Amino acid sequence: MISWFERKNALAWLAVFAIAGAMFYISSIEFKNSSIGGPGNINAVLYHLISYFSLSLFLCIAVVKGERKGYFMLVLISIVMAFLYGVTDEIHQYFVPGRSMAVSDLMINLAGITLASLTYAIRIELKKH
Image 1 (spheres, rainbow, N blue to C red):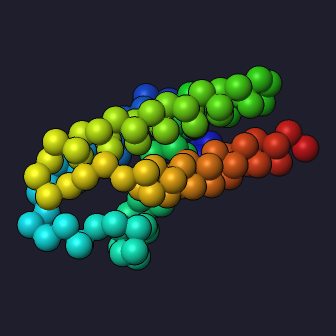
Image 2: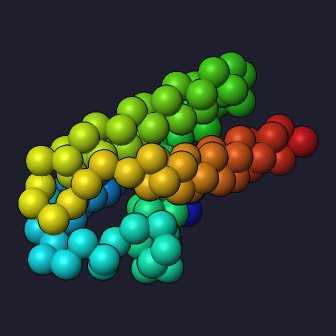
């Protein structure tokens, strides 16, 4: 399936923007009770991990396109792009009633980003051999 998205690069980018758009929409939802989110809530942790894993994986696919030469730098660029999106998302949440910026969310985002990037980089390495 990943190979298919590498060949259909425009669809990989469409997935990136669809995931980012869905994440922006969810970040715009007001919470009446601030105890819903936060690092102690397993649903919030899973949301961040899965969302940023998905965003980062499709971002890696879209940017790297399965290239085996020089892919490491492209994966790093994808990591930075996904992390910067996470930072802007946290800033956006600051302005949403009932939401707040949280460094813990950024760390969970980074965990998802790292897992996806490593998964994709390992896949490329395995394809080399």
